[in-house]
Image (cartoon, rainbow, N blue to C red; front, side, top):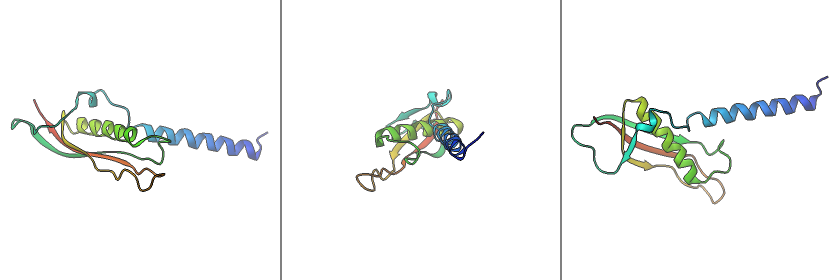
Length: 119
């Protein structure tokens, strides 16, 4: 027989698993994303600019991660998005997040960059 307490625990576990699955899905490097590289010098003239892309990692569902860990996840999402766009190079990547609102509450980590296809 289900009790009210069992039902509440079951719902809490289900919600936690669902949120965990949603929060981690974009932060795994895909096989296509693994072929994307960050560069510091302007791409060659033969490279085609495909546009800008953004990677974001929410601090709300990430637990106790540091900003460095969050920005790594945002960079992974950026690489995956660049690959989806057909790119293999990200130039001028920048951490555009406000690192801390206060000493206690980190904000979302955001990384943007220009996506190029270089052959």
